Length: 385
Image 1 (cartoon, one colour):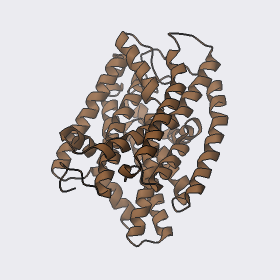
Image 2 (cartoon, helix red, strand yellow):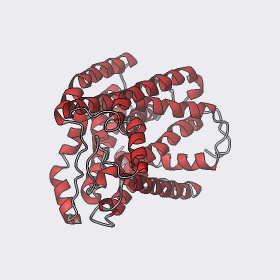
Image 3 (cartoon, one colour):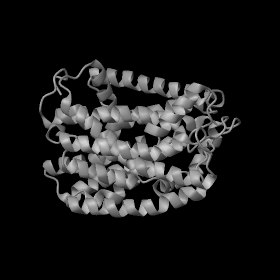
């Protein structure tokens, strides 16, 4: 936009506020969710949390279980699905055939998988790009189908997850997973280990976490332009946000009470963890809808909002940036703070890393420079088109 101090009632400006602001905040939530995975000297807690040492650690754990874990990932998936429809529509408006537009989405998905491989093997970060690339490949055929087909697939896939997720997590148990690091790990050790097991990561994510339903929800929202024309769908966005938050909180509350109010046996914890994951679908949709409401109601874009939008526009670049810095600060192959700090301090480190991303993105925005990974992806996807 040429003038970001005033929001015009155009499609692009509404998209910038709702989508880019959502993506910018999403990166903070993902950094907070991933930081505990590097705390290799801490005792495991519930799900992907570590045992609290101080009252601040405990607050961070509870807030994470209530509002971040399995919700940030779902929000990412909703926005990813929304983006698939935007890409398809953009290609059609440029005069591309439907088949070619779908091929563009598939090429983009393949390159996301490649980027995720690089992040996992060479940087050692917690990757979700491969999983979303696979989701793009699986669902790309639906971008030109009718809404009822998208809804039907959402219902069927969600029902399948409802049947298998509680059983799988009940068998696994809900106690915290051990981090994939140890004090003696070197960069070469981690790289070789990730090179061997990286093909399993995205497949395991798709089995244990319902990414596809959230992507389909995002595609459905894009068909109705809920985030690109939010002022026309305020009531619908309000309903989605209220109902989604209610379902999300109800699903998260039992897990957040474990250890304080009650101590169920392991299989029950696993079952409740599955419930936590499933209700995260509603939470991710609610978070996306909330940013639609913000976009519809915001009259001006201030400095802070502009900066958050700047990092959201470059979400691929700064997702990798955040993950790389988490590895740098917390993993044993670099500064090794993950073997010394508690969960609360790790959360503060994650916030600081995200703030650095916001500041750097703001500088790029002022100088009208796109994110380097966005530019690379665009060049790779469209080099032969």
